[in-house]
Length: 503
Image (cartoon, rainbow, N blue to C red; front, top):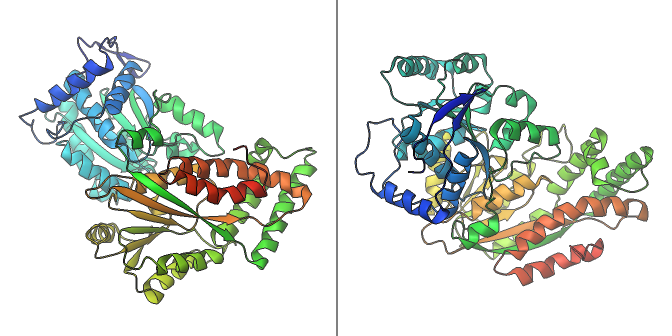
């Protein structure tokens, strides 16, 4: 399909795919399409097989080509919802065809992504072992099938596990038996850059593929470098949100910033925290606020987290939500993103905003909703997903467990009550909402943005530097919306307040 006369060598634990790739992108895409359409007879169950209905998009084909050109290593930086899973499984199918790949190991950050990957793998004729619950549910099966691979009685093995399970002694003891022809796929690979998790990745596996819309780890350059050192550099070209919308991989959208003022009490607390940040910088003998100084100082990072929690739980967001949804009682397929907790780091009322939102929607407005959190059992999540898609449930009220990898393309509207300062969360969330779905012509995003209080001159420069990055994210999303002009006018007030009109 892609490789001709491929020679397989092993160099320092890495399989060398030495083909020179003379096919142009246009010819390669035609080759993919023709080869895909000629897959009439399925191999035995469990062996990789591209489904007959699949026609890869040109950017997916180019990504596959460049991964092979990079000698079987690399990280795909593709917008959330643009088909990273399908691209990755297509690579596995091609490796099976060309070099008789024997094992596919997929590592996911969360349990629900294991089951989601399992469903996708089944479309490619695979029969994966889902290794993420109690050891007794998978260890014996994994041991037996690895033995079968080595004895030649089994042609292919697919394993899907979580980051946490990968790091256990039970799973690590199995990694030494992975054969040379193994491909590891790191889903939402940015999570694998943390030191403890990165150390658990198998070094003897030469074929490596990282998947992430945002491989750069927030405030962690060392972790980012470790991640890219293991999986390989970002494969060019990157596939941005603009690219995804332009090529129909994601739908168009309307973006409505909802500006929210802090209460008087919240404003006082916000100003005090910001003044402390300024004093920390002055104590370090810095003449001006610098983002590098902020990002590399643990004390300042702690203060920023406290302030972010305060903003996330801002009281007036609930009033804005009530006003918004009073006009939208008949709408369906709406997702509500709540904050992770209250302003106090050690507070036990971490679900306070979620409860308040549920009260407003479900009790006051009789909106048919339910919550979707990390505590929701996997079986219940699947049931809720079906009820949401059918319209039986008008909305889901979620915390961060819906940020990464979850595929609910029926979402038509998102109301974002709180976001972390980490740009990854914002990028992941917008991708969730923009996934195509039958009958879904366009999505709508309501984004609640807190207006910081007026600050004294000593802390204004600190605030400007902190806000600059976040405002760029809002403006980028506004500029790509179908109502870009309207959205930018709403953000203009925030730009004026902090002298950031040049962004």
